[in-house]
Length: 185
Picture 1 (cartoon, rainbow, N blue to C red):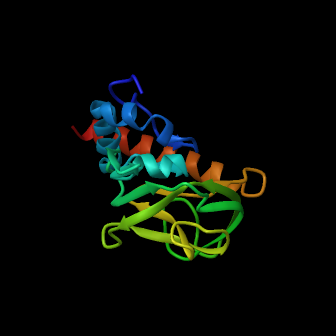
Picture 2 (picture 1 turned 90 degrees about the vertical axis):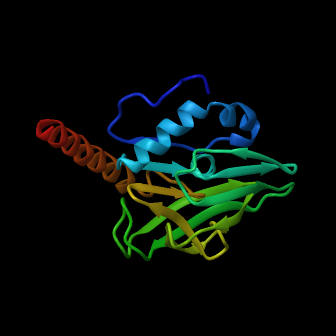
């Protein structure tokens, strides 16, 4: 909330959390939000869960007040008074995305009071079929764009150990591409 820009990283993991608790401060830090959005546009691998998904979106509406978020994903969320998703999740990968192969099954859990207001699917896609849980729209989850994959579901690390390997491999690839780009310049 205080940093002015994202430090040099090879990948970014934005775990769950409660952006609604700090929405005003997150929205006010325009420089940091812009640095994340620019890093996404430059191909930085990003894996985000729940609060991270909301933060990467364009806006978060709380009690009728609109708080701008990162804007890396073409989506907006609104906070509700009751849980919109709560419990264990089982997600099957249906579409190609930056981290998991088609057919792969992820295990996790979700607990969120926010709901999707809108999504421009032409600019991003949903990779997962929800077999158990609520996901983003009751049927799908796993919003992807460029090297970003963001989901309401918090992956169960022991039940889906592949997610860590996938993130590390994406980070290695990004680091290598950055070194090649610097050598060319």
